[in-house]
Length: 239
Image 1 (cartoon, rainbow, N blue to C red):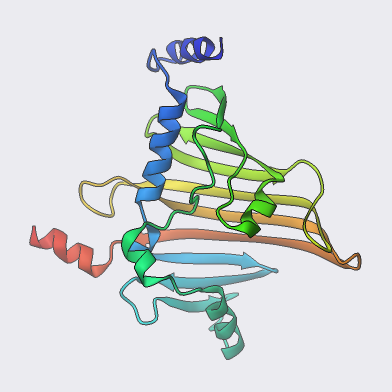
Image 2: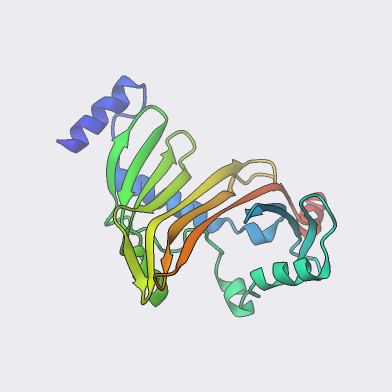
């Protein structure tokens, strides 16, 4: 019955007469995983604890990450040290063989369920899958929503949050845990390629640690100003 209703809705909206929800989700996930933001230059604007941190990433740079400003001012040594601690160096072997997906393997197309479709988007419900033991302890308490653009067939937005308070580890309770990711499509970075790259990562966490310390943390990271690195531009010019 659900498949029939989906097909009818799409037909009314002028869309295709058939709709394979699993195939669409699988295609959109593969598309997100195939584009690695670390292949490009970009700006990262991080809002954390009331401060704005702006960094530039260049895959050919040494170092690759450069903190350029904190609240509009040149960073001091302590701030530079803090920013450096955020960056865990990627495993070189890993970098060569796999793409860096923001979603990783947290969404299983076999378990996700199509819950709504309109003329613009298909919306799925899923329970995130944790790859590490720590992720598993967290994700089993969360429910997710995933939004796919039906025109360009790419993931626009993913939201994960808890429905009840939970304890991911001894002494820590989360009353609110929400994570939101947004993506954008880029057709102008490398000739002939349409790429899906991260646009925003937002978290909102509230709770208590060891009964005495309140947890109230919000952060937002915006990724923009993507540019093809010099090596990629040189290859295009040579062609």
